[in-house]
Length: 89
Image (tube, one colour):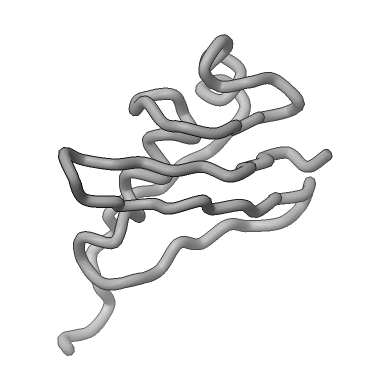
């Protein structure tokens, strides 16, 4: 069991799958970075991990299911979102 366990997680907006059957684990001491173009679900994934968005599947933070206990995620995770780019593309 990792610090964060994402197991078969999916998220759909209307008829569009944003995240489809995603699984990964983050162990103690590891850093998670989510990279990709606009609109692929990066912010949605983070919001699901900290309990701000509904989802299908299972997300656990420190062994506790986020759907029933999102306070654990909010107290024990550090989060940096939407940092401005360091260079012009």
